Amino acid sequence: MDKINKQTFMGYKRPDGSVGIRNHVLILPTITCATQAAMQITKLVHGTVSFVHQHGCAQVGDDYEQTFRTYYGIGANPNIYGVIVLGLGCETHQAKSVASELAKSGKPVELVSIQDEGGTLDAICKGAKLAARMVQKASEQRREPCELSELIVGTECGGSDACSGLSANPAVGRVSDLIVEHGGTAILAETTELIGAEHLLAQRAVSPQVSKTVYEIINNMEKRAFSMGVDIRTGNPSPGNKKGGLSTLEEKSLGAANKAGTSPLQEIIAYAEKPTKKGLVWMDTPGQDIEQLTGMTAGGAQIVLFTTGRGTPTGSPIAPVIKISTNSHLYEKMNDNIDLNAGTIIEGIETIDSVGDRILEEIISVCSGKLTKAEILKQNDFGIWRIGPTF
Image (cartoon, rainbow, N blue to C red; front, side):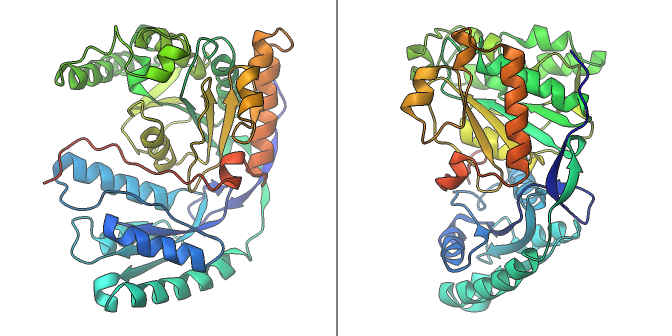
């Protein structure tokens, strides 16, 4: 790979030393019954973001811990200037506990409880007032030159086809290598869709322990499927993937693994966990698009590259998602949703490296303020990977 000069983008420097590429004020509902109030606040106050979800109560053990970690990670993401934590008051995931942890990041954090305020309307009123003041403060912050080493880039593929492993995924792999070369971090996720390619990643592990963990998390994911009577390695649970020409999950996995480029695998992290090392890391997530997207952004990813051969509008409430089509037909058909076309590789017009370089240029533009199509369409999807039953 040719050595390239350092490039910069214009970002927001945070109190904890991280760098954001957006400057949102987040209304963070810690319980499903506070989500509608949170959405009302976002309607009233420009510059705020929020999301609807089904979590936050009657969760225990590891499932509770994972959801709490996700709440914290979303609020701590560098793209967030400040947070209004909105709770009901009697839920399992107490808003005050989330707010207390988030305050340690140094960013502005406020707490609102629907029960303490005397009901939904008063909570919305208080939350809107606090948010309005926070947004005005956020608007005073200016972008500054930042290096690509500050970036954590999430990678994802959804609605794949026979072109995915030949065009968009290898091009994203090129970008992953470039981000790593610049001193940044690239996240590989979708454990489900790496089944069958685990040996390729294990060979690139930086240590025997990391290599061993590769096989362990693959085995654990397969055991989950076996417990429900399904062998997902030799089948393919996605109708869209089948129509796209991928008859088995192993076929998809061999193409999906190309998003990892050629860099050494530094570590494997849990869902919604922040990387502890620079370079290529693997986050253990399901293959479900929105749940893995939430996990990566909770792990600190400021931006996500999302390849698709079938088409998807998926986006995040806090991080720009750049959609990359694997074929030109899809790019033309769903141009309202797709940002870049990698189908030119299939047509012989461009190479994997040239498309990768083009994606990197788009990353720099988006990091500096350009809106992705998912952002423009307000595609604020959110869902947490649940690993236990609700009690």
